[in-house]
Image (cartoon, rainbow, N blue to C red; front, side, top):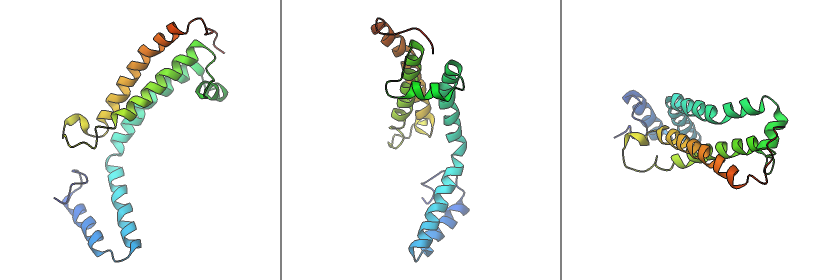
Length: 156
């Protein structure tokens, strides 16, 4: 089957791509055809990628914007290695880290040959980011409760 790389590419596109690979005699033509195929696949899945970007932005950046505001120095302070100065900063760090790790872990089942509907891009990454976000919402208060004597409650 010539359409193994993406089911939404028409048969004419597959014929053009195949002719590009068959006719390539030098590496420049091969490189151009590879770039053409990658761009084709990128634009086909651009809506799905944009949906994942919107989800990750709303789970991470929106909360930070509400707590920290547009102050760039506060963002740098909170997301530096040891920059959390309050409980709110720590909560932001934990939930953002759990969300991003969840999205990253959610990408692992994509290349497996299970052919399940939840393996399609970006469903597993979206589910992973949502599970990571929920884990962060549970882990942040637990971490605060465990370290409550060492933390300050002032928001700077």
